[in-house]
Length: 189
Image (cartoon, rainbow, N blue to C red):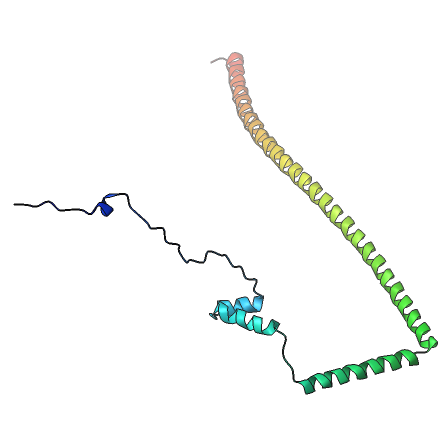
């Protein structure tokens, strides 16, 4: 005798997927890599290693206090040299530098005008080239039409020549017939 299988009331309802929160990170991150970093990534290096190295490079480096003092001393020395140069510069040197700047500016202006002139000539040449290209296309079309007309005239000439030859043969035949008829009429049969 068979027995009925009992099914739990929990399993008799609709399918349940659960309501527990999932811990999946759904944020989208984008990275801007330099060409060198991209080459390294394509070579098989891990993205995390490349980004860590970039992060390390961007952090300020800690230097020793003695090195800091050397840098400050060098900066002070450079400031002193700059002040000496500014005080030692004579008005004559300043005027000479001004003249050089004016001459350089004049030269730059001349070169800019020359560039503008050459640019204008280039644009004119390009416009002329475009115009000549259009004219060339028109002439090629005319050549094609004239070739077609020439071919038609050749075909017509051949037809007329064939007709002329046929007519000449007919005239020749008629002349022979007329001569024979004349001989028969004059001399008898």
